[in-house]
Length: 563
Ligand code: ADP
Ligand code: MG
Image 1 (cartoon, rainbow, N blue to C red):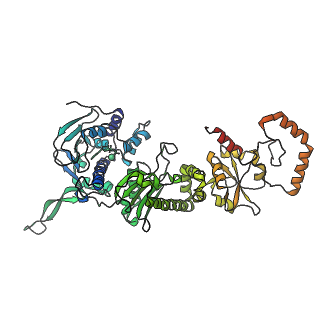
Image 2: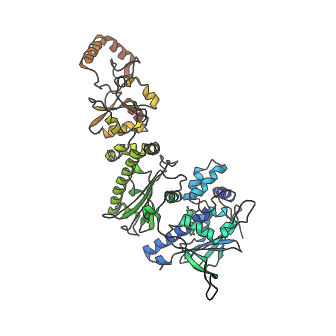
Image 3: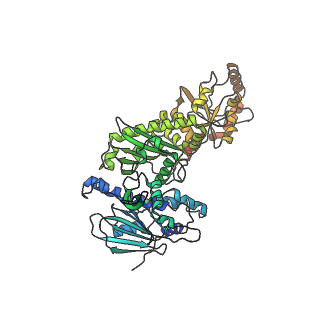
C-alpha cells in the first residue's frame, strides 16, 4: 500500500500539532465536532433543497464513544461524507479557512508563545494529532456504496484504502497517545472529561452529540443505599445556538469563545452586539467588532460579509449584502426565519427582506458605536485607530450617501485639546463669532503644528482640526458642513479674520509693494500662480497657499493617484 506525502505546508502545521507542548489540547474535540456538524449541515441543506436524500432533521446526529482498553476515541457523523478524492483533497492538503489563516498569521514566527494561539481559534482537522498518534477517517458519501479509509500516523504521510462502512457519513477514530513524562493523555479516555469538553466548546452545535454514559441507580431488590451502574445514551449539548439564547443567560466568556472559534481571531472582540427583532423582518443577529484590524483589512483581499442562516441552517458564509462598506469590519451572523432555504446567491441580492435587515443592522451598529464613543471613550479611540480610516472612506465614497450616518462617529486631532475630538465637541468650543470649522492637513500632527499657514489662526485662539490621513480632507469636503458650520481649510487664502483696519492696511501694503511682488512672480514663473502679501504669518517669512476648492494637500494626493 503506497504511502502518500502531505503537501509541504500541511506538513509544517502537522509538525507543530504533533510537537506542541500545548496546554489546550482539548480543543481537538471541538474541531472534529465542528467538522461533523458542517458535514451534516451540508447534507441537511441538500436534503431540504432537493429532497433527494429522504432524510429529515431528526435523523442527524453526532456520536461520540471511547474505548479505554484500545485507547481510542471515535467521533461519527451521518453527514455528507467524503469521496476518495475528497479525502485526499481535504485531509492531505492544508484546509482552507481556519488553518490557512493560522498559517498566514504565523508564517514567520516559530517560538513557543505563538503555539498558545492555536487553541484559541480554529486550526482544523490536524489538531487531532495533538492527542493522537494515529488518526483514521472512514467515510462514505450519502448515496454511494463505496467507503474509504484514510489513515495517518503523522508526518510520514497517509494511506487511502477501500473499506467497509454501514451507513453514510464519517467516522474519525483517534488512537490516543500514551502518557510521557509529565504529559498526560489518559484524561481524554475518561468519559466525564470528554463530556466536559463537549459542553464547554460545543454546547450550541445544532445536532445532538450523543454518548453512552455510565450512571448509577438504586439497585433493584438490593439493600438500602445499594446502587448499581447502568449505561444510557445521553445528548451532551443543549443545541440552542448562542444567538438564540437569552442575552441574560450568556456570559462574556461564552460570547468571546464563540467569536474566536467561529471567526478565527485570537483576541476577544472589542464589542459584542446581540439583537433580535420581530416585525417587518424577524431575525437574530450576533455581531462582533474585532479588537484589531485583520492583517489584510485594508487590502483587496479582505472580504466583508456576515454569515447568513435561514432558520438555524447556514446558507451563506459571507453575505456581503448584509453589511454596508463603511462597517465592513463587523463580523458575525444573522439568522432569519423569513428567508427560504434554497434561495440562490442571485436571488439573495434582490431579496427585500435582506435589504430591510441591512438597514436595521446599519442603524444598530451606528448606535452601538455612538454608545461606545460616549460611554467608553478609550475603547472607542482604540476602535477608531483600527477602523476610523474605513469610516472616513465611508463618508467620502458612494457620493456621500453615508455621510449623515457616519459624521458623528469621526474623530480628528485638535490643535488646542491635543487629543482626538469629535466635530460636535469642536463646535461646542467655537468662539461666538466663529462661522467655520478650521482644519489643516499634513503628514503628521507635529508637521501640521509647525505649518506657517496656520499661525494666525492659532494666534487668535482658534481651534484647528489636524488631518493626517489622505482621505480626511476629501471626507470633510464631501460633508461640506456639520450643523450648519462649514469646514474651512486653514491654508485657504480667504479666511476673513482681519478687522476692517487690518484689511485697509494690508491693501495699502500690497499697493506699496506692487513692483516687488511682480518681480517675484516673474522670477518664479510657472511655479506659482500668484505672489501676494499675507497677514497670516507670524514667525515665518513665507508660505505656500492654494486658491480655489482644492488645498495643497488634496492636490498632492490627487497628483499621487494612478491615472
Ligand atoms: P475547515 O473545517 O476549516 O475547512 P478542517 O481542517 O477542519 O478545515 O477540515 C478540512 C476539510 O475536511 C473540511 O473543509 C471538510 O471538507 C473535510 N472534512 C473534515 N471532517 C469532515 C467530516 N466529518 N465530514 C465531511 N468532511 C469533513
Ligand atoms: Mg474544521
